[in-house]
Length: 144
Image: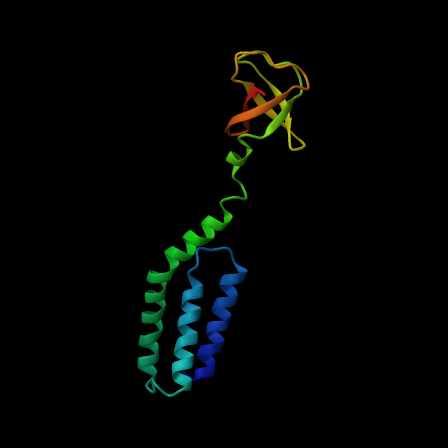
């Protein structure tokens, strides 16, 4: 296969990976096609069977070596976006009275949340409270 065909296939596979949500599979085959195209361009692998052998070897080797670190890096970057634990320590305002161990609602960052009073003292309407824990969509509050 001609070098420019390998480069074209590589670019198409990389573009498909970028255009689809996935777990980083096609990008490694795209990179392998680009590598084989570059090697073919310089005439280092003249036989077509050698190119077809080099393509899956490079792709699978890159997949094995680079996929897990890439996924871990992406997870670390996205972790803070949906992290409700960042709400712990924030100040909420009660929307109504909540007795000790009782349930009610509180406003936090402009949104109404279900709230539970985990303190010993009752909370009155409009009282400032600290978020001590988050369980799903329930805030555990204690008076400030």
